[in-house]
Image (tube, rainbow, N blue to C red):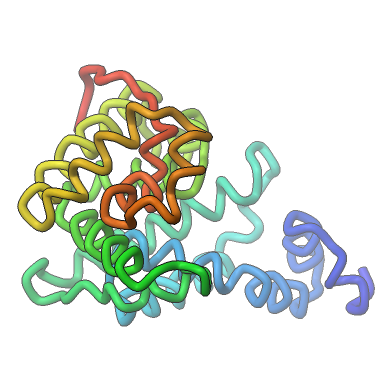
Length: 233
């Protein structure tokens, strides 16, 4: 593969080119996926310094494991797995009380049309997300925030689909409980969003009171329908 064609190559093609002896193909892939790895690491860890460390670890892991990708799953699913594992490895190095949640980092993901109170509300939701069980948070991040299917999240986290659904349901409940303490309006907004349904909840996201809709906007809870099944957290 010519270097000039890297820009138009798929992720899978870039990885295959690297394995075949084109080192710059991996550089192109990492450059393309840098923001993705950073954003996902931040959602898992809630701290910019830790996210940076996880991003570095994920880049190294991709370098070492490139030859292991066989195309049995989507490249993105495989990448989600690498980033999650690296983020959890980084998290285990630090005690929870020693890490501050960098809520200001989440302003980078908002559009210029967002109202300041809505941004503040979203930051509060993200702070609450960092307080719930890590396994439940990972399930919510993948299924709700990243839009993976339950099956894809199951493959990524290496647990049954029923466990993913259970973690999402329990994570939502835990998140609502924390939000009720931080800002009851957000917990109420999350509940309302869940009962409104998908497109209606999204259409009312802006201009109808940021605090009332911040939880469903951030986490997509207006579209999340999962069964609370037994089997793991």
